[in-house]
Image 1 (cartoon, helix red, strand yellow):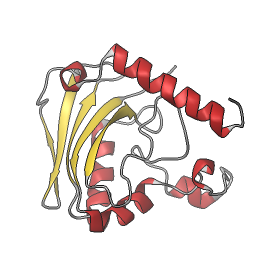
Image 2 (cartoon, rainbow, N blue to C red):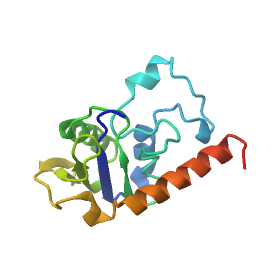
Image 3 (cartoon, rainbow, N blue to C red):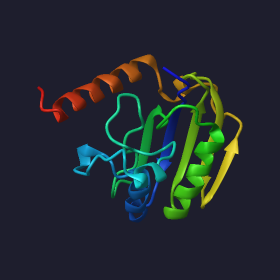
Length: 166
């Protein structure tokens, strides 16, 4: 279990910036994208951050920006336990430096997967702001028990297929 934080991210990015965003988010250990999984590599851990993609997981955000695709709409847990809202904001500041057109709203749930929103982070025009909650809970933006169940079933199926089982 542990102290996981669930977030909902929605917004846009210029397709010209998507490659830089994907390179920032994907830390290079995801075996499902044909990359070598090497958790012992210092470079993998040096690039680890709350919004990173390190391979298929059941509850994670996944690779939440796709090359050439301008829209972003995703929910899931941060990459590891015990990340604070400010950790997410700092990561977004780094990401905006690499992909300046990133224009998203990030609703951050509370600790231990609490769906009550504790802060909303926005990125616009290269500026990242941490604001009071703009919605009361993640259910308002579609993060419901049914949505979680569907996401987990889809991820489990993906994991099963990627491991050669049908």
